[in-house]
Length: 379
Image 1 (cartoon, rainbow, N blue to C red):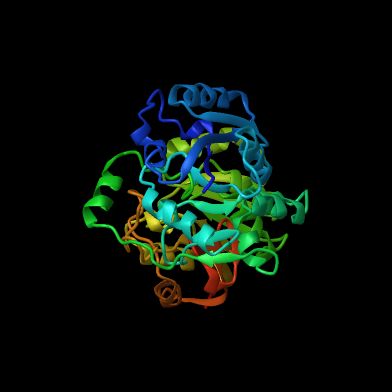
Image 2 (image 1 turned 90 degrees about the vertical axis):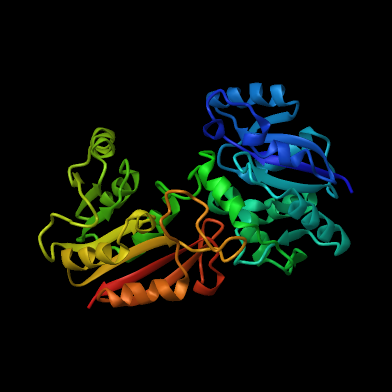
């Protein structure tokens, strides 16, 4: 088998001056039974010169390419190391220090044995422990098929490949592992498990939410962070109030954005200071898993909404395997779909529609992998 690992990375993945390979995915990759070459693929930004230096220190290749067209960046990185169309590519993220290389090797073996183009894992398994495994030829065909301007797909081509089985042979490795509780405790206690993919401003969530808003709406963006999502909403509605419990974060948001219909407040989701029934929409993206009492948060959202007004809520889903527990230390909980709906309805809301999130795209509810978005109205 001719196989390479392409590490998708950005300078923000570096842990200061720490270059210990066991704190990144490199140590695991070097234990692979099949991977012959490792190349880092990062956006061509001045800050990523630090990754070039790190790659040299680690003895691996590095390619700087397109910032948003990840498909093209990975293909170009593979070409840098002389990969052919039949080369097996394992795409991983630099900060996955807990990568299960035996699982990745078994995915590559299934790809070869089944003559597949792409190997996926069950939806109830946390894919952060694995890799996206495909042939380079598969990724090149996907690049040709995807619209050149559709960066939402070209940034994450994996779901596109999975959805088009008329063009790609996709196999699923059903035999996935479970790990001991001690491993979960080690990962959570390591201070190496970042939330880069799990929290903060998700542009695709706010863009998706726009379809449920009216130009006359007054919106509360609860858990707004530095306000980038709030600013996007404010350009499409009458007024937005971004709320976050951290005063310094709110100060940053105020300094970052200057829109006449956008305001930022220091608020606690457990005890909102707003009057009853003042908002047409409450937007909350990846906040509820962090609050101590999620039911109280939802009841506060209910109180500040006018009757019939909407809640737009996105939260992470609990991966049943390998742990059936949150991997991210700051997540007090993650949600099973049925129990999430029960919680929302039990807080006085009627569910209008619900979506899954799979590889950064909103999909049908039964195809959810990493998160769920629910639109509900105050009853």
